[in-house]
Amino acid sequence: MKHLDLTLPTPEANLALDEALVESADQDEKFPEVLRLWEPAATMVVLGRSSPCAAEVDLDFCRAEDIPVLRRASGGQTIVTGKGCLMYAAVLNLRTRPELAMVDTAHRFVLERICFAIHNLKIACEINGISDLTSNGRKFSGNSLRCRRHSLVYHGTILYGLDPELIAKCLRHPVREPSYRMSRDHREFLSPLRASSDDLRHELRRAWNADTELSDWPETLTESLIREKYSQASWTMKIP
Image (cartoon, rainbow, N blue to C red):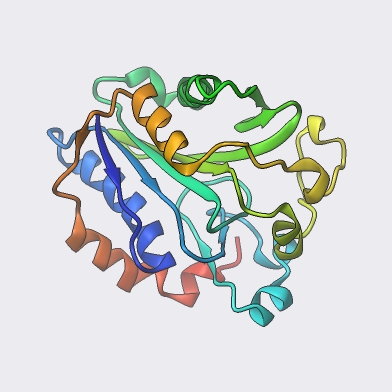
């Protein structure tokens, strides 16, 4: 597997790159599997593909604080990311891993790799709910996936420094929640890992055997997706 440690300058570009990678892998059977790592410099809110914006986001707070709200191409609920939240995306080949077309299998396959990396930092890690990772019962990672015909992208968050207080101000209490949450608010439910960004990046690359850098990423397709999709209010604010 290749690795791509690349944070682009804008929120729109960073979401577009994840989609561009999986679309490139879907169209070109020679495109390698990739582990992408990135971390935004400023806070941003990212809706799931079908997330109802008004129900999940405090838009008044986000507007007042100039926090951008965007929508990703994968499912799941809304997340908040920013400095102190490492983002990862694993782009996997369904031609060689056809079993991952089964969503439950894909969840287990990827989350076990992430847990392996966290355990190597001597930190407790459990899989909870559909696709959450927790440490001692408190969530530090939310994850989602998007399947194409021949490839999938599985991506998510690893909270290590972003303040749960800020997350609680950006988001409303979720409409749906896993039973293990037990109605805890964001402040009580979330807990950043005691780990550095550098250590997390190192262990993730090691867990995925991502030893070689991807030197040629799909820049043209990324720019097209920014222009035609991720910069468009019609995409971000669509009614599910």
